[in-house]
Amino acid sequence: MSQTDTQTASPAPTLDHPVFAILKSQFPELSLRGTEFRGQASVIVEPKDLHQVMAFLKNDERCAFNFLSDVTAVDYLDYPAQTLGRFAVVYNLCAYSRDDRLIVKAYLDPSIPTDGIVPDPALEVDSVTDLWPGAEWPEREVYDMYGIRFANHPDLRRILTWGDFPAHPLRKDYPLRGRGEREAYRVVDRTSS
Image (cartoon, rainbow, N blue to C red; front, top):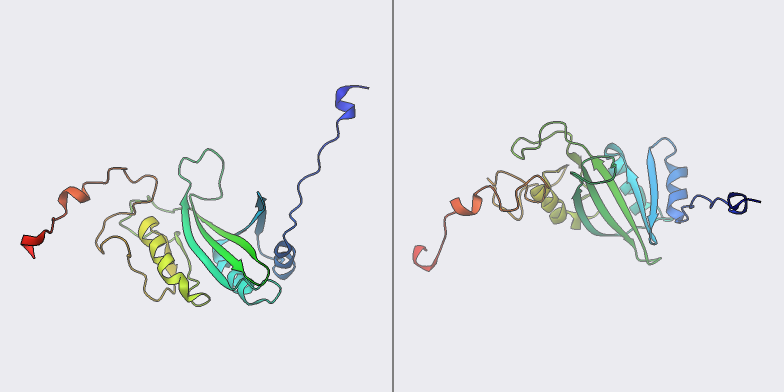
């Protein structure tokens, strides 16, 4: 018997988070992907379906993700592995009744060159501030730093940079030393007030 005959193929890993089965049965027509890494479950949702799935995750008693811990984004520009889009909007949900967390991601691809000045219509998802009011400032931060807009946001404006700032600093194509904004910025000291 050869060595290859004695080795058995390991089975594909199963996704055992209970929310995966609930989402699959609730939304059979949607394209949902589930992953688990080091005990952390993630669901990947199409941007157009994000708000519907998030509302279900919050309001369904089997899921009951009643706390939105964080909203952030990731720029996968020049990422070594294949991704579903250049940007991902990432939501960290908590269900305190079960001491459980779930990451929800929606991938977005720019449809025009991402200079940061002209808003890209493809870089937009629905806001979840109607579900979790605490999403207001994190969504504003994602908008400011990445240029991803949130439809139906009550006050979508920059939160960390000034209103006329010409770019989005956390995009990976933004220069590390800036584009000269600091050099052109007027310094305010005690004598100029």
